[in-house]
Image (cartoon, rainbow, N blue to C red; front, side):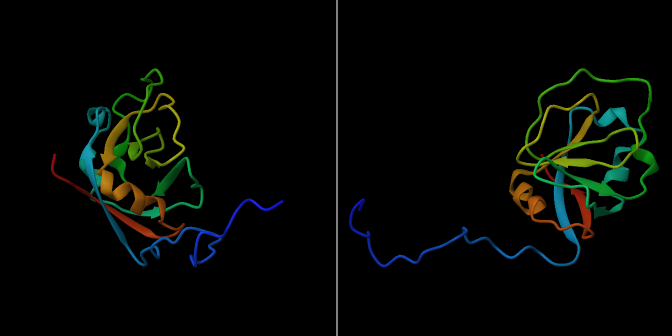
Length: 140
C-alpha cells in the first residue's frame, strides 16, 4: 500500500552524518564538581594523561592512569545515590575516573569531583578505547 509521493530528491541515508572523531590526544575542559574535596588532591585529575579504557559504553567512559591524588580521603565514607548530569566525572575508590555519558545512572555512592563543560561532552562520547585524554580546568 502506497503512503504517498516521494517528497523530493533528498538522498537516502542509513545513518546520520557525524564528524570524524579526533585522532591522537583529546583535550577536554572540566569544572570542579560538588565533591572535589573527597579526594586527596583534585589537581591530579588535570595533571595526568589518561587512556580511554575499553570498559566504556554509552553509560560512561572509564579512564585508566595513575593519579595517587584521586585516592579518597576517607576510604570508608560513602554517599547515598544522587542524581548527576551528563559529563559528570565520578571517582571510585580505585582512583580511575568515569565520565558519565548519554545513558548515565545515579552516582552509586562515589563522589562526582568534576564535570565536563557542555560543549566537550559530545567530544568525549567519540573518544575511542586506547586514545589519550588530557583534562584541564575550564572557567566557571
